[in-house]
Length: 463
Image (cartoon, rainbow, N blue to C red; front, side, top):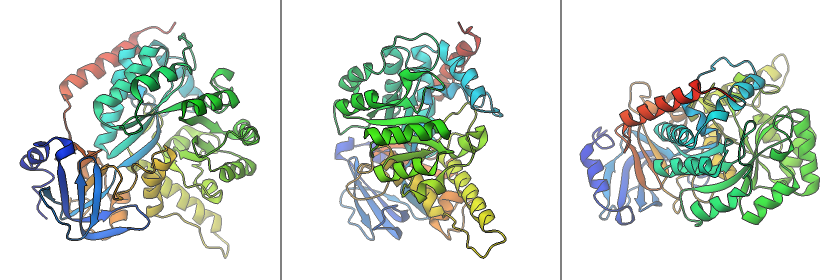
């Protein structure tokens, strides 16, 4: 392995010497986990990036005038895809690590801290969450931005995504509690015209809503009116707090009303009835699981609903959810889901002649990449290292102390690696992380902004 290439300032300088649209990069000699069902895993192979796009994957590619990066001893994989994170909360990370239940989170964060947020606090939290995502290999993040108190709050959240260079999905929703301008959902029309006018850009827009009126009243709950609004605007819908009997009944109503489809994502999906799952499977509705959230906060059954999703023919995406109580990275989501499902499978078969129906490391990596992209409406854009897709990828050092020797590349990524092993991240063909560091970030300045915002939020009385 040439250890100087994805850590070398000289290589980075050569990459950045040309504008992105005139640039080619060839990663050579890597183990490539494409997550493309037709390509699989390629050993001692090359990957060519031209501009913002992956143009070729395979052995012995012609480098042409590309900058050649010796990727021997590394695993190349697609960037992870986060299907649901409340990014604005990031400056409140782990403020309640042992939260007792959903009610405690709602009353402390949504009825408390959220009500004093200014647009600048929205910006700082969202920026911090997005940069952290990039650092841990997440190149696409759906920001379920449910604190859109004013148009300026929404603008700040979108601009934070823009400034970080992440492939961001801004899912806008009005707040649960406190004073706000009641501009949602109508303001999404303005947002689309201002920030989302092109179909070929890093950011996309979705409507964010809740499953039922139990938490915040009927105005925020999904139904025919919001479904028509999203359809007229040509955007997808992400529905949070989907769990239990009330959500199961709502899902059956949505199916009858014809407002369940592949452009709708249901988040959590714990404790749902078999009839609800049947309706979801038949309509092609997508699902975003939140493994650590379901288990740690204890949402309904507290068991991530992967078995239920797979039984309904749905391969789910994965998500981070709330950093006030949870981890920030996708490695933990994959491992949590992998362990919980396999525990359940063995437990169900224990003492019988049955064989446990266990998911694999390939399954959870698929959920974290290709299925996450599909869940976010971006399957044609990202989620696998397929020629023609955008160059969203990560480079994992397989010869680091905690990973060597490389015996199984998917197992190494899922079970062995963490953010420290990611030497490089590309998003849309741009280098976002190199030599283990996120680029173009003034960390001392960011730290000052984060601490100042945190102090304001914690010390401002709730009205």
